[in-house]
Image 1 (cartoon, rainbow, N blue to C red):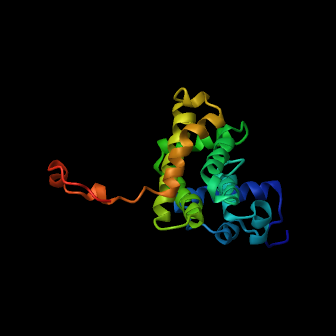
Image 2 (tube, helix red, strand yellow; image 1 turned 120 degrees about the horizontal axis):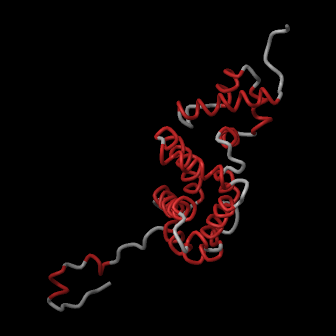
Length: 214
């Protein structure tokens, strides 16, 4: 039998996914590279790139995600900054509402709740592939904090709508969710309003009835 790297086949693809899933869960997202997975699987790295295109693609396939939210968000980041909050929210809702992509995501979310290994992996992916990419798109100071606040709002929507299935959120249309949650998401991405001089006025001055400037 000729020796060397195995050619591409369904069995090879399955072996790559098994290796990638195990390594993601045990080593974390950042530590795993396409090259290291290819080396363990005994295939050329070009074959993994052909199958999965990128590390994000490999992660999504290894975790049985038909649509990777990180890739969907990357596409949604392009466009008018003024409509970015609504666009990001609509994109994520569409991914989770989709009957093909939603159930695997829900299964992963349940694993996050039950298993620390899954929780650590998803936390790292969210930080590197979502929060940091959103932060790079924002203008002004505190971009990392604002992107993290975006993650908090979105995580609340996803947990409430899909995991807890709290009504009426679970039955709302995407338009209704965007209308109700959009302002909070916009505030998260834009950051809190600067504290004015009025907020810094000593209580004694206000109690004494002295005029407040600002």
